[in-house]
Image (tube, rainbow, N blue to C red; front, side, top):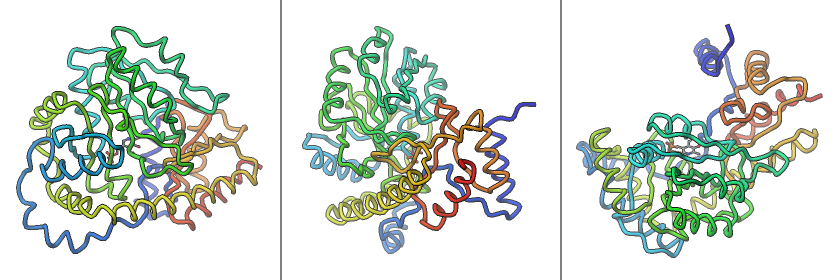
Length: 371
Ligand SMILES: Cc1ncc(COP(=O)(O)O)c(C=O)c1O
């Protein structure tokens, strides 16, 4: 029987349970120190026993609206903020609400795999536009314009992109924000890797915010707090009201303690900004280390302008990324994410935001297959 991706992940789990040390580069969870929160947890613990309002704690929504308004010089109100159990819940609920009456969603490949499942679960029809290797996996905006129809309900963009690390330029952001208004679709901009912008290219769609824009952010990636399950989005007030009602039936509210702590963290704005630039530097050092290693060995990869992952071309002797990933796991005890899950079978993705020793050791084992 043909093996599936599920088998690959299961195999990794079994090896780990057996006590084997697997170097895990599959997930994009950053292994950087979180903000200093230990004391805050004890202080706020007693306020965390009940539900919070659907859509999020009002204090947190206010602090987020202020922080991002200042950052992008825009006027966001707490009514524009929606907080969810992870960026995933924000995206999931958004798509459920937008696709109530069905419709099409446009997505560029390579893509983050959960978009596909989410659109399907919401009953939407996906239109996938391939970006080409020849053009460095940058989205082709002319092609996009041709594909928009009266059925287009939403376009999903992800910059910095997971898995390619590509970043949309400000003029493209402005053009696309304008296009969403002219052609009346919702532009969903997933910006969960907002702080990892190594070439200073990133521009948020919040800069051109209007009722057709919805931007998504996450504590998982910018604070290395994946386990807190906290994400937030900015959108039109009416849309947010519908999302609140959906969340009320789904999970009632996001996790109370992580929201209260996040509110306290964001209140110390200067500290947050210092923390972000420290983590960006940590990620950049790792990116530079990995790309220098690959360049020296003439291994092809997509230059990550941002994000915390790198998309690397598989060795020519393998017919697809799945078989290469399987070999790496069995023979080298290294786990990576095969490109098939992102819509491209000739590449694999690995997490960069990891300890140097793991990166060094993992790359050494990977490089054996390119000689
Ligand atoms: C592109 C992208 N968007 C959204 C998420 C969701 O993150 P979370 O639900 O942890 O906030 C991830 C997580 O890997 C991601 O890579």
